[in-house]
Amino acid sequence: DQQVKQNSPSLSVQEGRISILNCDYTNSMFDYFLWYKKYPAEGPTFLISISSIKDKNEDGRFTVFLNKSAKHLSLHIVPSQPGDSAVYFCAASTLNTGFQKLVFGTGTRLLVSP
Amino acid sequence: DGGITQSPKYLFRKEGQNVTLSCEQNLNHDAMYWYRQDPGQGLRLIYYSQIVNDFQKGDIAEGYSVSREKKESFPLTVTSAQKNPTAFYLCASSMIGGNSPLHFGNGTRLTVT
Image (cartoon, rainbow over all chains, first blue to last red):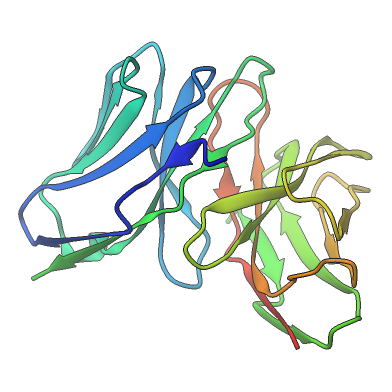
């Protein structure tokens, strides 16, 4: 049972344009969401997060939007750069224990071409 | 420079042999985790530990064992009982409490033939 879904395995975008990566979840108990970026043969690195009390969080070129009623979140990258080419994982957790047990999506491979 | 060190980067073993993957962190994090990544799949949680000498099974613990004798170290043993051990293994750590993101090591790619 995939509780966190990233339905697009890949996305291609031109440099300078917007990249939009989508993520859906099924567990309404999730209250904290994160995006990780992963290069080949490396570990994921934390990118940005959002808690369920917010609907938007911004950090430089990266913005995450959360739509709780639709159980959907998205990551916007503006403007996209070739160095953004990587696999992006969406993850979700519940914080009621004060401890993160993340559930990851399957990832979306982003390719930003010059 | 604080971080998580996984060694070795590549590991090859014959079927039927146990193998131990190393994970050390100097971030002073209480919690440590082991994840497994397979092609086309997300990261799946194998084991996690919130405190020394205590650990819990994750979603796919069968065929694996761990120990947490020191705060800094969380080795994972892939036993011969693990049916599909070939995978990319990732160790992570985090603080406990609040919205502390996981910090990952660079992984160990295990190939069992």
